[in-house]
Every structure is written in structure tokens, then in C-alpha cells.
Image (cartoon, rainbow, N blue to C red; front, side, top):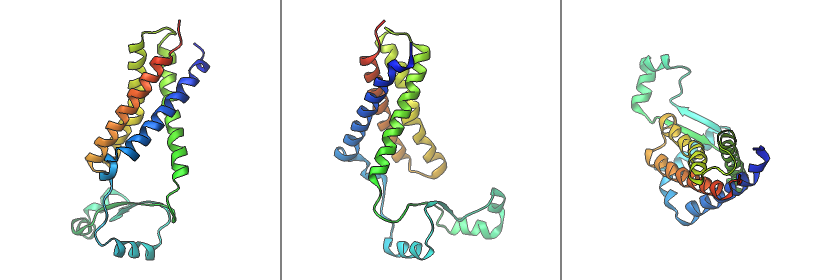
Length: 186
């Protein structure tokens, strides 16, 4: 089956996922629990402003390697706290347009990979449930499984990850349904 025969499914399913994510984030609002305000936020912001870090990902207390965590001074810093992973973004209002374009591009990429796998494993006219299962499983890997890494390595609360996995499951299901409905006939 020529891969070009699946581009419409890739784009349509990306649009469906994009719209579903808008509904989930803007109307259902269950992601409001993802972020909390810092205690004494103004004082923390003032301290960060004086340090003027460039945009990036920071960890405190910072160690060059794990051997340093055995040093008494570093142990004391970790025990005293805070232990934090901090993302510093560029100054100014968040660029939602740029983020939305990147999110849509990610949706296209995940669905492209799902279509690639399906193209090499399924034939035109394949059983609809099989199409949905293959596409949905690959899409689930892209949309949902990646969420787990942030809890393992970046300290993201597991509740945030659970909400992200639920979102990813919905996106995978919608992707699978879209491909099933639009799968090429034999």
C-alpha cells in the first residue's frame, strides 16, 4: 500500500486529537490541579529575578556527578532542602501560538509513526478492529507512555502523570477510530 494513501488519515486524526485536547484542557479543566502556587511567590520571584537565569532547566542543589552527593556539604544541602527542578521560560507572556503549533506538529508526528507501522503490518481492507488496535496501540505509546518519564526523572507528581496518561488514552482511541473509519478498502 503506498504510504501517500494514509496522509489524509494522519492529518484528520491530528486535527481530531488537537480539538479533543482543547476540550479536555479548556472546557473540562481537570488539569487545573497540575500546577500550584509557590509559598511566598513574590519573594521567590524576586530572588530568581536577581539571579536572572537564562531560559533552561535547573536543578538545586546542583551536582556535577553523583559522587558529589556523598560529600558532607552536599548531603547537608539535600537534607536541608529545598530540592528542586526548575524550568525557566523566556520573559513575557507564554507564547501559546508557538506551543499550539508545536503540539499540532507532535500530533502529526505520533500519527505519522502509527500510520507507518500500520502501512507495514496491515493491508487495504483490513478488519476495522485490527486497524484500530494497531493504530491505537502505537498512538498510545506516543501520547501516553511518554508522560511517565516526567514522574520518574523530573519529580512530576504522579497525579499529573495519571491525568496525562488518561489524555493520551483518549487521543489514542480517537486516532484509532479515525484510522478505522478512513482505512483504505481492499
